[in-house]
Image (cartoon, rainbow, N blue to C red; front, side):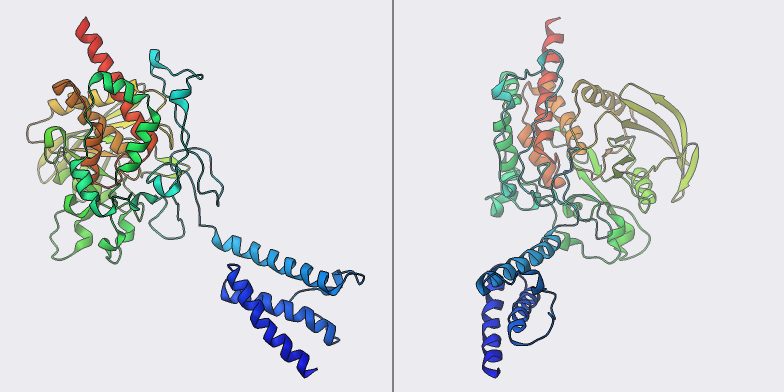
Length: 464
């Protein structure tokens, strides 16, 4: 009997090693080994199973070898189910598509959107423009299917994609962003806009330049960020003025200054959609920066909260700033609110364009409404007082739809002024100032489509 028990003990060590090699954790392997020992003990001692393996379910006519195989399969199956549950992330969702993906399916093929360009609508039979080449997960930095949503931790309801894992250019990402360029003439632009594979390759080659969360290791900061891994790049972040000394939290807001056309400093501010905790900070920034325009490109809720309703129906006061709604105008694709801001005896006017025709987690179905909004904001900017500051643009995270709008605005000016566009250069410059701008490949394609349409409008107007 003692010899048998010694043999079981020694063999259990082998089973433990076997289960560890199979990918099980140490504790799980011990549990499975004990179950196997329990099975053997049933032949030696007249006792019931201790560790949950019921040998009575095995027919008496089967051989001992078959019994062992059945037990091993049963144990492995139980362990695998337990392990599969532990492997699942909190949530794995697509940020820019409606369909939820399988929790363990980490490498689906991205879908290419079809844009309604009026006379330029793609046909279903155009294999060249509709073909998409599967791309590995690690290569699809920032794509709509490479984003992990972790809702277990406060301050995070949005994904921080694999965008932080740069391409093989890891060690020269900053250099790439400073030097990246691809000038397109009108003819080249029209061809490029329909070349999905080339645009994918260019997008995935461009570093995202996300901020390492370790750079913002400050207690309490999680309450200031809508998404814990979408953070402002340090060199260009907006710093709120504060009377308190060395109080980082009172000076912090998740926002960055962005250069405009021709390298114009501080032409835009890209920021996250305000949260309930940061509405006061948002209005402090609006007043401090003397911003004449806010462009909002998100709904208040899209499956979950994307932005707090930071404006009043009539009048409200935040941080000593009195905000009063003067008028509300509803257009086809956006609403315009005109506010009066008062603080310290000074009064200013502010316009908010709330663009509502950008579908949740997609690119717009039509380009003209976005172009019209870009042009309307440009006209309003020209009418603003000379002392006005940056135009504030936000969506939810402040990088995807925000990046598309700002890039389109800059590139429309470049096309009118120079007759060419450099979408890659503009994207690189935006990402230098705020990581992740133009968040997905589909958005990058959409910017090309919008500029292609705008060039055709310019050409048509010149002919008339």
